[in-house]
Amino acid sequence: MTTATMDNKQMTGVNKELSFNDNVIAKVAAHAASDIEGVLDLKGSMMDNMTNMFTSGDTRGVSVDVSDDAEVAVSFEAILEYGKSAPAIFDRVVNTVCKTIPELTGLKVTEVKMNVKDMLTREEWNEETKKNDDDTHK
Image 1 (cartoon, rainbow, N blue to C red):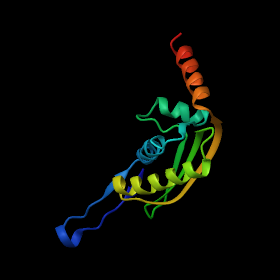
Image 2 (cartoon, rainbow, N blue to C red):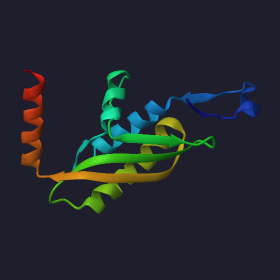
Image 3 (cartoon, one colour):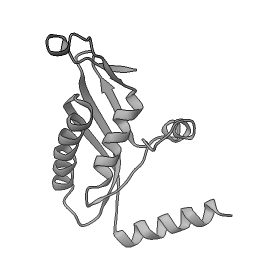
Image 4 (cartoon, rainbow, N blue to C red):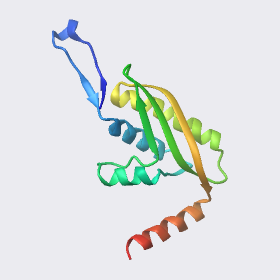
């Protein structure tokens, strides 16, 4: 578990400690990145997929490393939309993640990495998604 400690003792006379499970930070990062146009999906490894079966929320394709200093490094495994600028998409992901994580958790993002696993057209992505849904419902 990751802990971010806030010291407001002078104001309230109460020691305060706010902590987050690493999975929560990964979930925040996943939501932030998934909302960016051009990010079709975040795809994790087989181990990520197995872990998600036993936890709440979808953090596939996202890993976080939180230091004792309340600093966060985030890594993504992504499928991006073909025909769109990967560097521009990545910049939007970085900006959004660097804004969202501190707003929701108080933790500071110090590193964001993205490995592009594939680039698909919207049509290819829709076909793949439909095929996977059909396979799931058999």
